[in-house]
Each structure stands twice: as structure tokens, then as C-alpha cells.
Length: 266
Image (cartoon, rainbow, N blue to C red; front, side, top):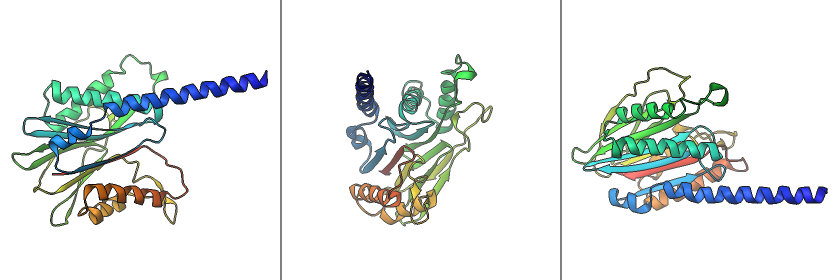
């Protein structure tokens, strides 16, 4: 009897893992493809490392006439709940930009925030964890060589041709998380870029990874410094060096969060 129970548990676990792996294929299929990036950018790289097969992180690109939109989002939770939230958030984002035609970054985030909260308006508080999304969103105007930026709890890093580093910060509250702050209005910032400048965006998974000689977080400051050190390399090389840096820093520690880093040449 005990052996039969264990066999059933093993079979159930195998079925569950198989379903997760199939869901992983579906989730990755919803992310932008190489051809989408190649149509817009001269060079780019993406590092995307889920913690538990499925990911609460996502990235998104869209193009309307001379405007290009790029976003990286980080949803609360990992695995299945995080993945479902990421699909919801990216779908609302795409609808707001591509279908509804909102093109100002702060207005887009306000629209996503409103729709995200509305999605759970019928759910009782007792059954909901006040989930939210941290997200960085940029709109690149290729005619004016100008970048517009808004975010919920995220920063972006731009390394200019003269090696100067520019850190742009957004609003200090998330998408959703309606118990956190009421009547949110997201800020918008702009940056005049030159052809060849490099934009880095990401979730907090890399910078929060525990490791190193003192077993501490990697930190955003160290990450921005590393961007500056590798930014003259090819994008394939930058990706390899970032992945190696992460592995070296992590050492024998477990990965603690989903990881997503996106780099594009402006």
C-alpha cells in the first residue's frame, strides 16, 4: 500500500513538472522574438532566468511609426502565480499602447495600473495578496533622438558614448498594490540620447542576488558599474560576461528571484 502511494505521488509530481515545462514554452512564446528586436534595434541582448521554471519577470517591445516602446516588468511572486500576473500585465500594456493608442509613458502606466486593479475588483480581500508589478517603460522617439521614461519602482541605466553613466529613476510605488498608495500619478522624464548610447533595463533579481565574499546582495550600484565596464564589448560578449558575473557572485548560494536584464543600442 505504501509503495503504491509513493508511486502515485511520483507520477503526480512528474505530471505537474511536465505541465510546468509546457507552460514555460507557452510563456516564452508570448515574449518578443529575435525578429521583433532585429526590426527595431541594431544590437541588443536579453538575459532571462526564471527562478522556478515559470517567471514573474517579463519584457515587451512595441513600435508605432517613429516611436518604439520597451518595458521590463517584475511581478510579485514566482512560478505559476508570478507567471500569470506577468501575462496579465504585459497584455494590458500591449493593449494600452498598440490598441488604445496611449503614447505618453506616464499615461500608459496609469492605464495599466487602472486596468490591473480592475482585473481583481471582484476578488474578496481575504483571498488576495495585494499583488503588484514593478516596471520600467521607455518610449524612444527616433526622429528627435529623445527617450521618455516612466516607471513603478524601477530605474534604467544609460551609458553614453563618452562613457558617462545616467541613472533615471521613476515613481516610488508599483502598478497594482492598491493597499500601498491611492490616486497614483506616474512621473515622466526625458533624455536626449546620441546614436550608439546603450540602454540597460531589468528586474531586481540580478542586483538582489546574495553572494560574494561577504554573502550580501550584488546591489544596483555594482551592476551599473559593471554595465560601464563591459559596454564597449559586443552585445553577445556583454551577455556572456554578465551571466558569468552572476554565476561567480552567486557561488554556492541558491538563486533567490527571477532575473531579467535587457540591453539595447539606441
